[in-house]
Amino acid sequence: MTLSRVESRRSERHGRSKPPKNGMRIAIAVGAALSAAAIAFAVWPRESAPAQEQPLAASSEVAAVAGQAAAQAGQAPAEQSQAAQPDGAAASGSAEASAPAASSAPPAGTAAAGESHGGAGPAAVPAGSASPAPSAGAPAGGDTPALQPSGTDAAPAQAAAPQPAPAAAKTESAAYIDPAGIPDGVVTLGTPSSDVEARLGEPEQRINYRYTKDEWLYSGDASIYFDADGNVIGWNNPKGALKVSVGEAKPKADRIQVGSTKQQVVDAMGTPDSILDYRKAGSSWHYGKSRVDFNPSGAVKGLVNTDENLRIK
Image (tube, rainbow, N blue to C red; front, side, top):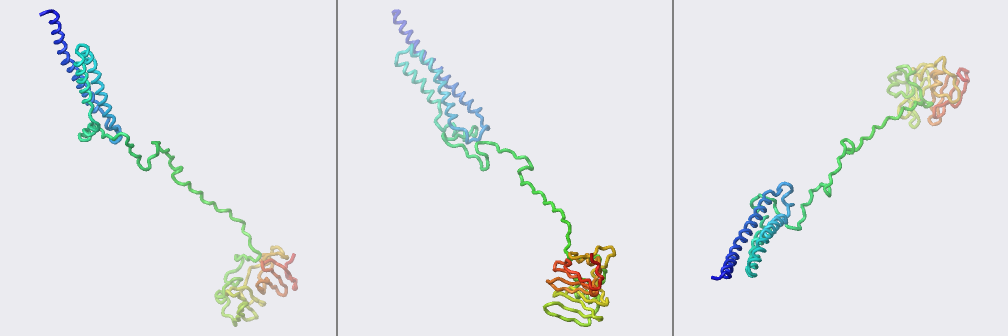
């Protein structure tokens, strides 16, 4: 056997022994890649987000990375085998290197299906699907609503209670007569007919004038006059037989004049002998033969001092 033939056989043996070594390296690289993929799935953050929000692309990317690692691990031994083997052997070696890499990538949906059955990983969502819509009432864009201070805008501000207006000074009309100066148990202006009968007794005669006024006649030429509502509007008491009064005279009261009020006349002159009411034309108070005339508003409009008994300014 010649030296050339021995070297040829030695080279053939050397070329045949390398493919098993290269295949062993490829198998080791593929196993390492699959182990890395399994570890990645085991430590995948399942509780960081809802299951529907984990895309299927994550499992596919992990498988692709594992395939690339296996391909890179087998690429160097394949290049060495191509240098020692003929062209046909190099082609078969590269095919063997690419086959395990392709088989390491699981088909689309495989990882998601396995995890959904086992419950070990997040559920997959098809690529391109929209994320779940926010619940009703949640602010758009994830913004947190501004907190309102308690007791400011939560309820409308309570309106301040209206303050009562200051009481205006009491102004009496010219016809006003202070009831405090009228003795109890007497008949006065405005006394109802029922009280008149109780205080003065049964009249001798009742005269109904229908559209004007009623008149009750008492002895001594005395009379009581009523309006249509039955209230006293005047009297005729020339002899002082009836217990009637609008008040008593005050010794230091001012004298009266045109424009004086009824209360000022009472303070200066006391209760008149006769009061005649002319309705819209006013009224007249008689002191003997003297007379004080009032306009409809109750102010003095004229003085007739026949008996010279009026206290006039």
